[in-house]
Length: 172
Image 1 (cartoon, rainbow, N blue to C red):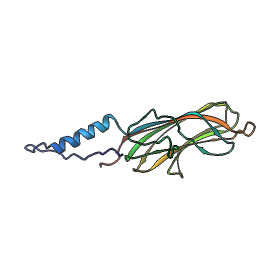
Image 2: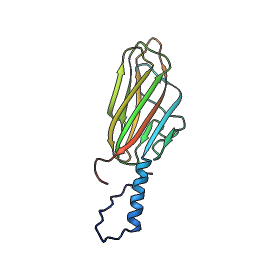
Image 3: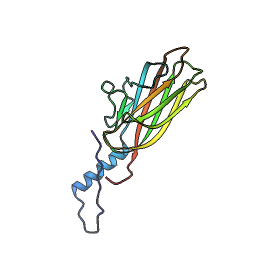
Image 4: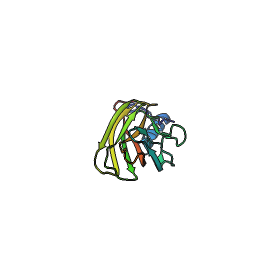
């Protein structure tokens, strides 16, 4: 369920401070203290085939999820935004073995829009990516990984993927 943010009107001298205004102000402050945020985790190895871009399935209990943004069973590759706004996205993928071939990670929105990616051809076991992007309610992101390791075939990964609400670009 999306968090609600209210536009609280300015008060003038002599205006009565109503219970509604106080409640809306309290809700806004509570949402700033605990904003929409999630950290989804892949705790067991997921095999990533050679030469195939694959969405990571986040199967473990989320470290936190304050706005019901991730489900470990249904669409477990997705973080779905219930509250519109600007989000900081942080991705971390750990490969179980170093490779001398290409590997990359991509943050993708709504199944088609690449937000950001990073790739490397050197021997690495970890890739990290941070992006900031504005989303509407009901949009979603996925974390994809790609590896080109034809000599060894599939490679296993574990991962974490976080989204933290930063605010809005316009008033609600």
